[in-house]
Image (cartoon, rainbow, N blue to C red; front, side, top):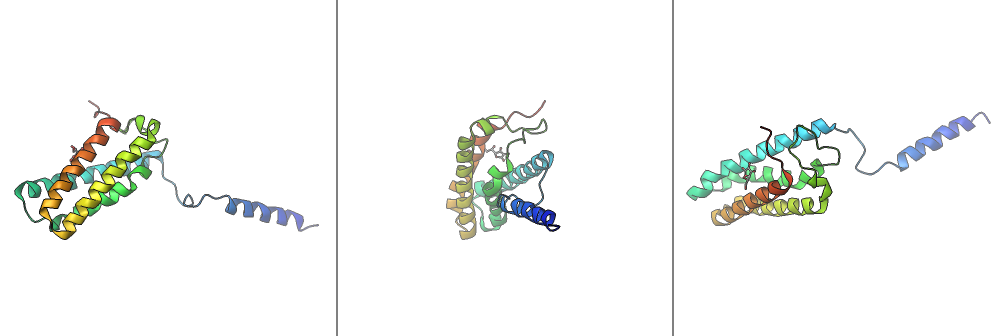
Length: 155
Ligand code: ASC
């Protein structure tokens, strides 16, 4: 009889571990931290992408752009996860349409993923012609998503 409370606690603990959603365990970030992290990623992306332009226009060696291309590709892969519900803050230029048209937003992200994956392949292969084509596709993907889902900068 005096073990009953212990059994009860053990049963509760069992519930807690079995109802945990896989992949959701561990530390969580505040909305402010998520916004700051994705803004950092977008700034680095603009730097990486902008840094490629001179080489593309000059028809230069694209292999040295592999690391920049990999950065864009890896960001593209995780981008949708960095826009969870509840992260439309005043400091963010994310438009509410991201969450209203989630499937379309993710389609845009998939286009960006495919374009950056192709860009990375071209860089690794040192294929300047393929890189130039992929560079154009990446720029188009950036612009298309920003048109629908990024607000104007605050004035
Ligand atoms: C950039 C940047 C964007 C995109 C876009 C391409 O470097 O900051 O938002 O490229 O202009 O269309």
